[in-house]
Length: 319
Image 1 (spheres, rainbow, N blue to C red):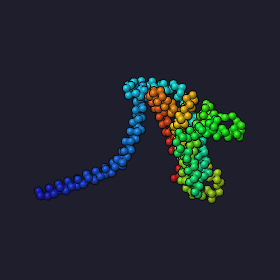
Image 2: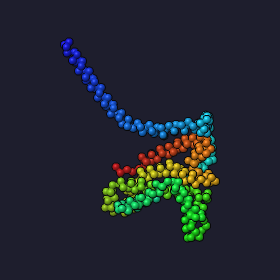
Image 3: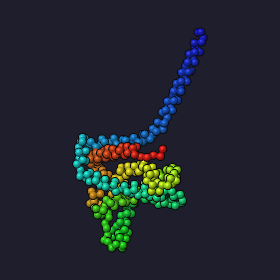
Image 4: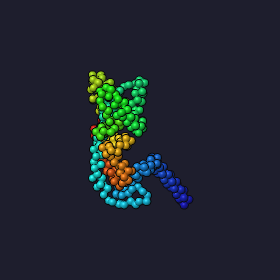
């Protein structure tokens, strides 16, 4: 018996080591996916959440971006100032106008184009997609300069055509306060049509053709097929594009407003992004700019949550 005890002890130690090794392997397998995601998490924290935290801190301070100038805590004064600024109120109204004005270009026209061009299988489809997507890949600055030349009241081809056809006086699309917002909206929407059309075309391409064939066998007309099959299956993409338009309309129009650079009409055409830019990098009032950015983040976050709820509630998926 005295000689068997060491053998039993060695066996138990071997079993214990085996179990520990297996547990370590299992734990490593559980941790391994997170190790692959760790670099992405670090980059997201550095480039997204760290600046967001710094902006929240700056919104409660007064600072002019100079390294030698101290940051002075002011509490909620920046938020109170933001809410009382007439520029913010005007920018919110303009932002709503840009958003509503872009919806026909990002939603209605792309859906119509995608439905009418659905089913094209020849080489023409590649040419059509390349042509319709080209405005999206052109730099926004170049787009603005080109349209400023096209819409010029004296040398632009649009005014020349209107004058030749209808004998009207030159229209100053880029200088009239009434026409500036519709003009900027049109220029921005012109570049969005192709991108949004491809989104809807991709969604239509994913529809099972057996639905369309079954509808044809049952005697459904083309419009009935569109109404009861295509549009319901496009509902996730419709809500997604609508969300993009609401969240990014200010960002899409900001470049065109900034490139035009008409100081006398900047307040007339301003949106939320131009106000943030002016207070942050022209007036160097970082506190007010940061406070406005935080309020904008909260507002757009609430809108995104509402749209996600709508998407889960009303979207129809092909299960």
